[in-house]
Length: 237
Figure 1 (cartoon, rainbow, N blue to C red):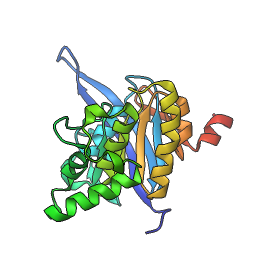
Figure 2 (cartoon, rainbow, N blue to C red; figure 1 turned 90 degrees about the vertical axis):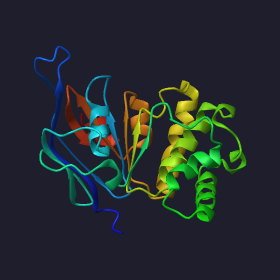
Figure 3 (spheres, one colour; figure 1 turned 45 degrees about the horizontal axis):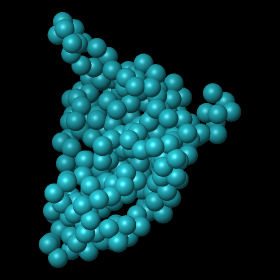
């Protein structure tokens, strides 16, 4: 597949929600535009409340769209009149708290998302992805026996195992200490590039954004102010 081909396209996106007092609507995202090609890593960078996590939820199919369009593989998946369910989008998600099942071991956690495969194939595929994140020796361990960095890599392997078209990550390093964040940011980029993964993450940390992403979108007040390569953002803000 041509790596230059656009996988994710967001055009004129607007999302609102009911205000806390229930008397009106509050705009969370307005006139947002971005494109992400196959194999690219994108990042939405901004402070808490700027709308970046809302964009992820809309791409997943968890948030309705007021206006604009979200396209995956040139197909409209969200608009004011179109809404494909999350399981029709081939999108994987890594949550802020990793969301590993405490009663399942590492291999079982990864195999959980492979219900579409025959039983004898699930463990083989799960182990393949554990090897790709360098944790094959932890297959029988349980989440509470892992470090924060290891838990994150298990969550990443679980998201990648069904081979989605796009992986979304919501503040993937926020629960880790600074030193571990810096190391894992580089590791995550290497994993994505080695496996030709297309990904979009959100973060409030500029270091994370610049260390991982090919394209960074600076967000404020529900808008992307600039969507560009890290070098361009730094030298031509």
